[in-house]
Length: 107
Image (spheres, rainbow, N blue to C red):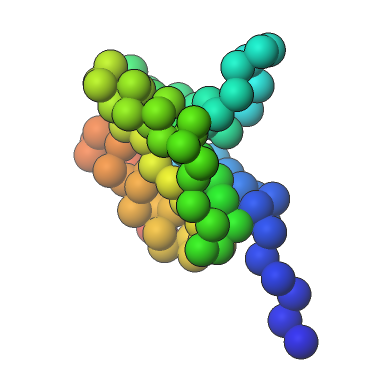
């Protein structure tokens, strides 16, 4: 029987891929603030985006969606990631990295 995929498995998958693209991940846990995205990713040329991690088929809560809407309104990109598919993670990373900075031979 295959083990159930949990949120930490999803985070680990994304972080491995993000690191291979030279991105820095920062876990965000603001005191007294609920619903804020799980991690912020930073890269060269002012690359900043947020990722909300979920176990497969789980959906963000209303408060999380409110934060997503606010961050989008402020001009940030935010993604909900719920898979251990490294190609899906690579697609998000590539969308956010200037073409000249994408490492060769990646996913």
